[in-house]
Length: 466
Image 1 (tube, one colour):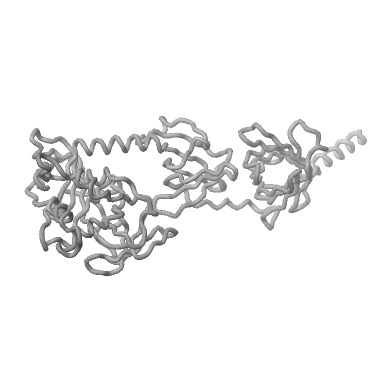
Image 2: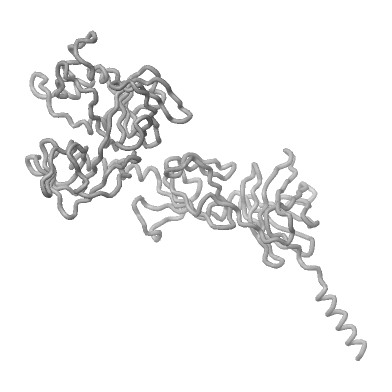
C-alpha cells in the first residue's frame, strides 16, 4: 500500500512539474530564408495557454492569419496567405527572446523548406504586449491608390494629408450604397474591389495595426449620384446676386425666391471649397450682394421659384497673371491685376479648374437671337460646361481668374474655381483703347454690360461649380 501511495505522489508531482508553455505574446521581428534570399517580416502573436493566434506579414508574400500551439519551448504554427490558397508550416524552438526553426509549404517535406528565425521586439518576455499604434479610431476620406504587394490602401483623409492604411485577413470590407446610413443594407466586399476615387470610412481598434473595418462607397455610384444632382440643379435651379430681401422673398436678378419653412439654407464659410460642404445657414444670413444658387419649383413664366434649397456666400474673384508655380505644394503665385500685389493661391483636390475657350467659341456660347443679339447668360452653367484644366495648364506668364470665399488672409487664398488661360478676360477688364484688337474686346464687354472706360477692376465669377 505504501509503495502504491508513493508511486501516486511521484506521478502527481511530475504532472504538476511539467514545463509551462513559453510566453510568446507580442510582436516579433522575423526572417525566412528562401531560394531568392532572406525575407523579412513581422509576427504578431496572441496567446491563450498553449494556443497561439495572430497575424504574420512577410515582404513579397503579404499578410495572413497565424494559428498554432506551443508546448514548452516547442512551437508549431501555420500561416495562410492569399485567401488560404497558400499555406506555410513553421516548426521551431523558443530560446528566451528568440525563436528559430524550419518553414515549409504545407504537405511538402521539411527538408525542402528553409530556416526561419524571430526576435521579440519587446524587452521583457513576460510583459503584456503593448497595443499597436493606430493613426486614429476612424478615418473618412478618398482612396488614392492600392498596393496589394504590401497590403496597403492610399487614403486622403478629409482635411488631412495623404496616408497609407494597412489591411489584413482580419479586416472586414463592406460596400455601402451611396447615401445609405443603415449597415443592414451593406454587402460584403473584397479589398481588391476598392479603386481610386472610392469614399471610405476606415475603423481601427486597439491592439490591431491593420484596419478593423473598411466601409466603401464606390466612386462609380458617387459619380452617378452627383451627375443626377447636377442635372436637377440645371433643370430646377437659378443663380444670381441678391438685390433685395423682403420677408420671405429674395430677389436675385429677374427672379424672386419664395422661402418656406421647409427651405434648406447652406452657406460658404471662409474655408469652404466644395459646393456640398457649405455649412447650414438661415434666411437671416442672406445679404445684398451675396451670390446665391437655389433650386425648387419654378413658376410658368420663370419669374418665381418656390425654394427647396438655397446655397449662398460672399466671394472675391481675382484676375491676375501667374508669376510662380509650385506643383509639389499645389500652389501658384499671381500678381493681381488691380493692386499689382502678390497672392499665393492654393489648389486643392476639390478646387474646380476650368480652361477659358477661344474667342470664337466664347462668342458662340454667348450670342443668341436674330442678328446675334446678346442674351442673358447663365454664367454658372457656362462655367460648368467649360473644359477642365490641369495644374500643368497654369503656366508662368498666363492669365487666370480665381474665385475664393471672403475671409482670411488677402495674400493667401484657397481657390474654389479657377479659370485658366484667361488672358482674354483680363484684357476685357482693362480700359478700352490700350490694346490692338479692342473692337472684339469691346463687343465682349457689352455682352457683360461693360462699356467704354468704365470696365471694372474686379469682375464676379460664379463660385458654385459642382
